[in-house]
Image (cartoon, rainbow, N blue to C red; front, side, top):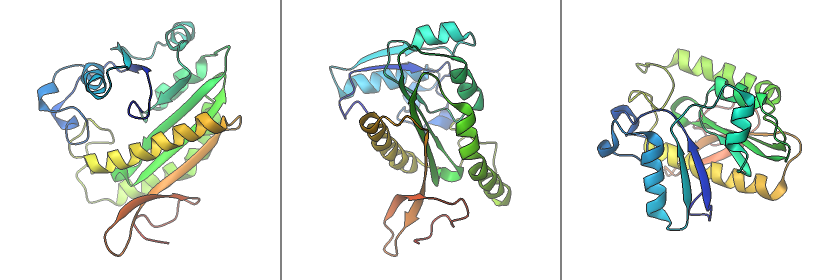
Length: 220
């Protein structure tokens, strides 16, 4: 996003870099034990001398008024947590001036990217839940049938079967999605799912899909 020209960004995260993060994170082992917002901010400032990064080493405030005040200066609020609690908190707020609300999250092994966005006064968590529910049921089935030794979903676990290159590919799609939202300014919620696709010669990409029963990894 910074390479695309973003000049002002706030990072909200109360977590520290753990060794297990490094296999999927822009941070390195030198950042272990440091705040994630500090590691990411430092990297962004190395990319562009013009970007202004606010490092908020806190969780989203539970009080709606405090959360609204904290995020008021920003035109877009982007959730990248995969956390139901974070979405529920965003749904409590009400911003007088409509802005972009977006959420990007990954499925099992980063084989799927879930993209959701809308222009509005608050995050429409019910609309998101209704759209995501059939996909999450399918994800649950995939997790249950996996032979991986799983500690649970999330970037904190070094055993979660997704690599940095998977995350970068999904992040690239997310930036394009966010640019489209900014250009089209959808007043109705826009939910899209992308799945990894591999061609016969081994080239990997993401493709938009409509149904959760499409076999992951196959070229339609």
